[in-house]
Length: 233
Image 1: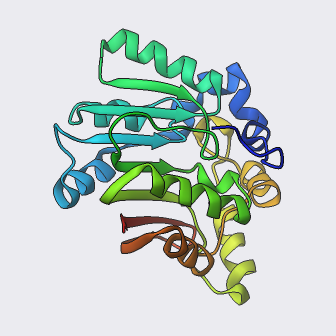
Image 2: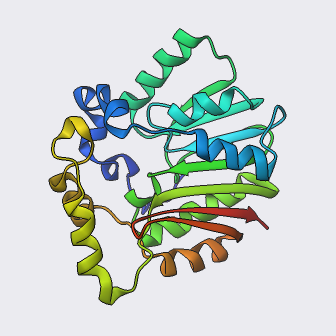
């Protein structure tokens, strides 16, 4: 597909730290992501199994994609960061997992080939796009999926009213890691607020519905993080 000349460059929105090899080398330790809970939901409630085609949008260093590959027929790990994908490719080579493919692309540039996706998964990636581009991205996600497929979106999504913002954000920042080695620091979270685009839940939900999804369930992990489980209509 030839993109219109007015499309944004997703790489420029990815956060410069995700393009730095030194930062990427420490990402897994910093993120400490455990895919078990998300996989349990997808396997137990939505039939993820040995016939599943899964696309991981914003796959990063591939923690979820590699874990899902144990159960899926095909996993496509998509990320705009070549540095992140380099780490993932080394993991694939070391583990000799043949069912994981890597694609250097983003929500607005990935072109899905082959059978439609049964499941699309995205964790902490959509917030890099402003709302206009989120809406276009969600429609593109929907279009790569089979009818009845599942979109699992896990991200920094604010499930509180505008009037609570100062109190909720201050509490979040106060609970930040003391050093970068232990997780995201207050300064890093403040940069997220200033430069990235986490939405309120009550703005995201109509976007999902407009894109062609039915929201099947929402899991709020406190007031800052949420998981949306959506069915492609």
